[in-house]
Image (cartoon, rainbow, N blue to C red; front, side, top):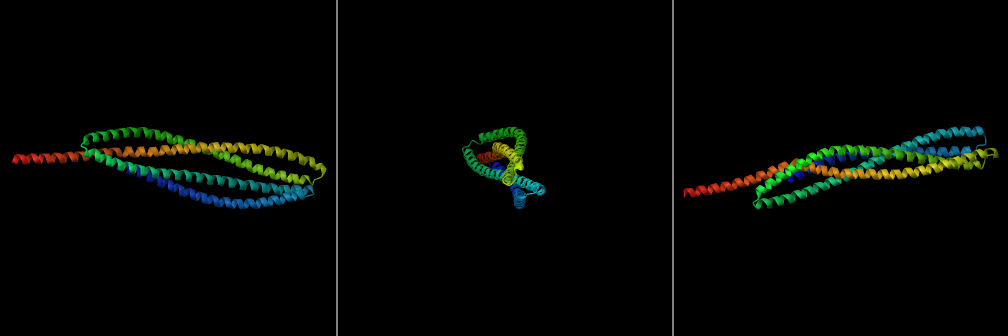
Length: 309
C-alpha cells in the first residue's frame, strides 16, 4: 500500500502541475481580456456621447436635408457602436470561459490533494495491519491474499482502461457540444439586449421629435413608434427565453464536469493500485520467505549442535 500511495501521489502531482499551468495561462487570458474590455467600454462611452449629440441635432433640426445628413452620421456611429459591443461581448465570453476553467481546475486540484492524503492514511493503516498479520504466524495466507488482490486489481484495471477511453471521448464531445450551445445562446441574448437598448433609444428620440414636427409628419412618426414598440415587446420575450435556456445549459455543463471529476479521481486511484499491487505482493512474499529461511536456519543449527554432543 505504501508503493500504491506513492504512485497515487506521483500521478496526482503530475495532474496538479498540468492544471496549475493551465490556471496560470487562463489568468493571463483574463488579464488581457479585462484590458480589452476596459478599452472598448471607453470607446463605447465616447460613441454613445456622439450618438446622443446627433440625436439631439436630429430632434432640433428643421430642414429635411439636415435631418438626412444627421441620420447618415448616426448610421456610421451606430455601426461603430455595434462593432464595439460585439468586441466587448466576445471578450467577456472569453473571460467567463477562462474563469470557469480556473474554477473547475481548482476544484480538481483540491480533490486530488485530498485523495493523496487519504491514500497515505490508508497505506499507514494497511502497513500496521500487515505487521500484525505476519506476527500472528499466517504469512502464507497473507501471501496468497495479496496475490489474489493483485489479480483482481489487474482485471479491474483492464476494464477501467477500456471504460476510461470511451468515457473521456464522451466527456469531450458532451462538453464541446454544450459549450457551443451556451456560447450561441449568450451571443443571441447579447445581440437581442443590444438591439432592445437601441430600440428604446430610437423610441425616446422619436417621441421627442413627435412633439416638434409638423402635423403632416406626425402620422409617419407615430406609425414608426408603433412598429418599434412591437419590436421591443418581441425582443423582451426573446431575452427572457434565452436567459432560461442559458441557465438550463449552464446547469447541464456543471453536472457533466462534476460527474467527470468524480470518475477521473476514481480512475487515477485504480490505475495507481493496479500498477503497484504486484510490487506489494512480491514484497510481502519476500518478507515471508526471509522469515521462513531465518527460522529454518536456526532450526538446522540447533540440530547440528545436538549431533556433536
